[in-house]
Amino acid sequence: MPLNRRAFLEASAAVGAGAALTAGVAAPAEAHEARPRPAKRYSFTVMGTTDLHGNVFNWDYFTDKEFDDKAHNDVGLAKISTLVDQVRAAKGEENTLLIDAGDTIQGTQLSYYYAKVDPITQTGGPVHPMAQAMNAIGYDAAALGNHEFNYGIPVLRKFEEQCDFPLLGANALDAKTLRPAFAPYSIHCLRTPHGRDVKVAILGLTNPGIAIWDKANVTGKMVFPGLEEQAAKWVPKLRSMGADVVIVSAHSGSSGTSSYGDQLPYIENAAGLVAEQVAGIDAILVGHAHTEIPEYRVKNKETGKDVVLSEPLKWGQRLTLFDFDLVWEKGRWVVEKAGAQVLNSNTVAEDPEITGLLADEHKKVVAYVNQVIGTSTAAMTTADAPWKDEPIIDLINVVQAETVKAALAGGAYAGLPVLSQASCFSRTARIPAGEISIKDAAGLYPFENTLEARLMTGAQLKDYLEYSAKYYVQTAAGAPVDTAKLTNADNTPDYNYDAVSGLTYDIDIAKPVGQRIVGLSFQGKPLDPAAQFVLAVNNYRASGGGAFPHVAKAQQLWANSDEIRNTIIGWVKAKGTVDPGTFASVDWKLTRDGVPVF
Image (cartoon, rainbow, N blue to C red; front, side, top):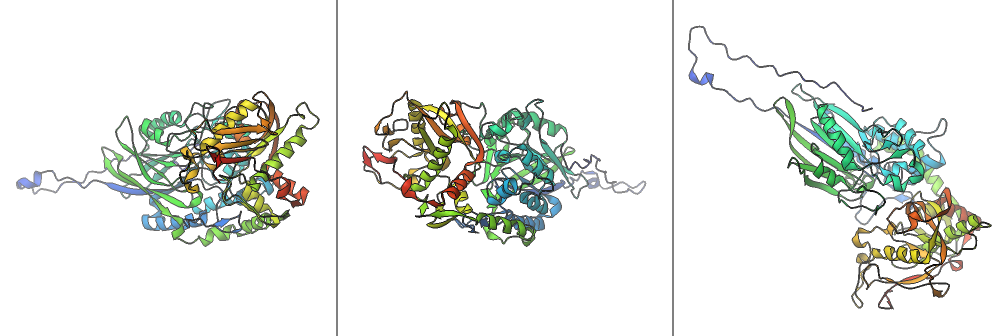
């Protein structure tokens, strides 16, 4: 149920007595003229974060050093805590709220360690570092993100139990009762100097894609209807309950786009549509898209009023501030003005209270990621992997293919050739020459994906590759090639470009989308459209993530419950030495009219 429900005061304003008149003496005419009273006003601020993804410290566990990027951003809740303290000091803590828009407990080795290595679900287990940090900072509410479900519902429920604030999800419903499985909203009362509290409602909405991306964890347990539908149901209820201000915390981008294809009737990035279609919302804290939007205004179709949206940059790099100016009109508080901005966490130092609170947990994880699991005869990197067939991606594919072959051995499908798909998840991943540690493997495969085997035909694989090749910007033969502008066409992220090992093909980027795969062959012969293959594929893709054709409906031959990252770690441990010369090969390349680009 909703938390923080202080009694909402509805006491009427006392009317001051007029000036006393001396009996029998006429008052001057101007004394009878009405003098307008100054309007009662109140201002408050709602701070917001999103997509924290397990970041507490300004630390990169994949490189084991302080986080840095080209823009010199900083990350982590310790930095956010300092910004929050500054805002509370400036505005008055009683005039602020702090909320989050989801994707909290997955993303770093810190969060992974306390979900899988030393799990919070074990008897007498630890308190999750994100719960500890967010409790200490004083969050008031947080929406559920899709990555909250990556470790299964028991881990999420334990995290919820450890938080001193509600996890909100109005469209996260119990599959049997169709009632909210988490608190849909929370209500907070801010005391004003005028004796009339402001009642602020926070409505949490999460992403319907959870039904696809974490199918194994939620099927039969929870369902996730569209954001617009559920907002239209809950916002009027919140207004009828006396909410003066309604803020939506939505783990959904603002663009109106979707990666579902035809798998779901809902929009993935629906925050802008919610603002446009649902009356009664004052502001939306946007998440999921990992973009920075200081302020974005959407006009509501019904009321004609602007709804203010803001998305702070991921991992705690930014803090959104929604500033509200209210005026007392006709017996209630009304939003007179609202705006948003973001603060940059690289402008402040980490809060020593937060870093000190979690120093022991940090040290444990640093020791864990530095465990040596094997050696490599050569250095490998993903720097060029988005446009070249690189050995480091071949490493993922050989591990996956060998694992699937072993799993199918002796069965009905043991005689089929096994292919494998892999993506470049990070352009900074590297396997060094010499010792390989857990952090190296974790940096290569940062997601908690598991491995499956799906039955595909040659024709289906051709469609699959054509779809994948839309990742490249069409570039005419002879035109200059700038790798900084070559990829991510139509906003396709790196993780939605798949290279498939076991086949040989060219991608002609001079051709339009859908006509790019050239010379597709298997074992030196043109690919037979009717031939059957086993595709080793991660569960995100197999469940429909990225909307690749055929694979989600293909027959599942086998599935593993262990993360692919752990499978890679186990493979390296078993081999002892990784030699790219034994598995690396150039199976695909970019061309233009038959001429290689590189």
